[in-house]
Image 1 (spheres, rainbow over the protein chains, first blue to last red):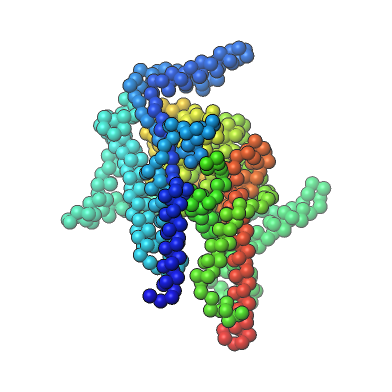
Image 2: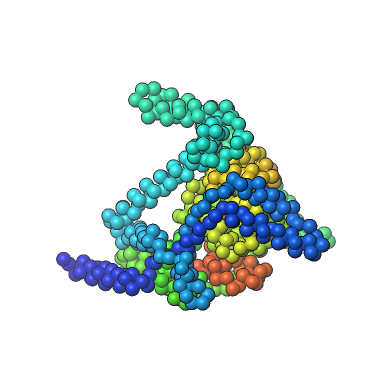
Amino acid sequence: MNRCMIVWTLLLALGGAYLLARAVTGHMGLAYIRQRSFDAQAEFRGQIAEIDVQEQATQAAGMTLDKEKAERRNWLKTRLPAVQGIRWTSYDRVTPREQLNRNGQRDPDVRFSWSNTIGIWLAALGTLCILSFLYGDNVFYKLAEAVIVGTSAAYAMVVGFWSTVMQNLFGKFVPSLVRATVLPSIPESTQSEWIYIVPLILSVLMLWRLSPVGGWISRWPLAFFIGATAGFRLVHYLHADFVQQISSTIVPLVVFKTDGSVEIGTTLKNSGMVASVLACLVYFFFSIEHRGSIGRIARVGIYILMITFGAAFAATVMGRISLITDRLTFLFDDWLWWIDPIGKRVGL
Amino acid sequence: MIEFFRHLDRRWIFLAMFFAIAIPILTGLTFPEDPSPMVRSVFQTVDDLPEGSSILIACDYDPASKGELEPMDAAFTRHCALKKHKIFYITLWPGAVPMIKKNIDILEDEFPNYKYGVNYVNLGFQAGQEGVIKVIVNELQDMYSFDDDGTNLDGIPITRDVKNIQQMDLIINISAGTPGAKEWIQYAATPYGIPMIAGTTGVGAPPLYPYIPDQLTGILGAIKAAAEYEQVLLEAYPEQCNNPRSRLGQQRMGSQLVGHLLIIGLIVVGNIVYFSDRKRGKV
């Protein structure tokens, strides 16, 4: 073991011991939840009573109740029989200081949460694994990278399945079946829309690619998607970008005030913008050789492009610093409990 | 000295950057913000709308851009709630669902009179990228039949009478890429004349400036603009000064300043090394 390795091993061991000591003594990375039980009918009655009180107050002041509130009360009353017997429990994440109530005593509804605590520790260790790439490529970085890619893909697929495939496709194609199985909130009045058989068939044809025979069938829906997407993107691009941007560039080069004098600021801005656009267009015009005056204008175009790229790069640097600031704030605040910028642990 | 910098291991620069960012966070270093005319213009766009206006907040970003966009997203949410606007949350990014939930946490914690379904609603995510905008600009329920909790939109007071997003008084798009602000401009703001403001990442801001002012009312570019927006909000609503959560962007500006000073210093040193080498004929 060389000297460098010994130093790193010692540093890691000391860091690990420090984290272990703080974790064992309950001074870092802990999460809490508030458990609340609900009865749907009681909740509805409470809201109705609240609106009734507001109505009495407004009537006492010689006014009438807000239309929206009256509508909400009617809606709550009509739904009241349907929600009988519906009860549930919610688990809301709370800050550590909420363990204590206003009198400084333990709040019985707030309890330690293993799952959220593990979440904080996983997020912290994942952040450190990713940051370890700055020292050099290593197995911890690769593990964290694989976890991110896998969970992101799975998350997007699940969200897309429930919001698009179930709600927008089957929820409209066979609403009664979807209501009876997975989405009870689909209204009874919803009728089957047979037009949705078209996207269903196209989807099946797309998945045919996985079949050992007839994989070429997937080219038909693909051709449809590419054609349709290109079509409507072209129209909107022409309208919003091409035509509108040309229109926005057609501005007066010299702007006069009402008293007839020249408004220098706006004149310089407009002239500069038009000159910059023309210079950049000349740079990308390759049908004429960039020599003489054309070459000089093209060179100005390059400078303008460089200034634009410089501004974009500077803004990117600002963005990257924001991202590392966010992660370090998470590590120092939620995990290590070194800082408390928004008072999550005041009084503990 | 020049020889030292010429062969400096890049990991020392990473370490220096770590300290440049970590020390301001640990010491709580912040600086006063002087809001720019653009930020004030964006603020006025939201503030000048009459109470109860309908605002669509499209949160098109995911946790990867949270550090940059969360502060401005939270500031927009607070501002809309302070003005008692109706808020419709929506996203074209699957990873943005937890981001919207954070906004809802703000409304639940800081604005207890704001009721879900009455003052705000979370329409959640829909796949289809700009195709979703293309549809909901004419018929909301063709894409969004339910809110994010699976409640039918006809059963939610705030959405019951909304046919399409042309009924919105303002679109606020917080964008980290595609689909994002550009798509909202192309498919909703420009063809239907819906007023729109955008909050973007630093890298996303420069390509959007040409849309101002005809197609985009204003833009907040990155964390600096978010911190300035918080400052205008605090000036207009002093009761927010007691809320440390309303300074999220400003709390991150100390690290920005020190980090940028380090980068400027490194650029200067790098150039000195380069010109020194060129003088000696090594380049």
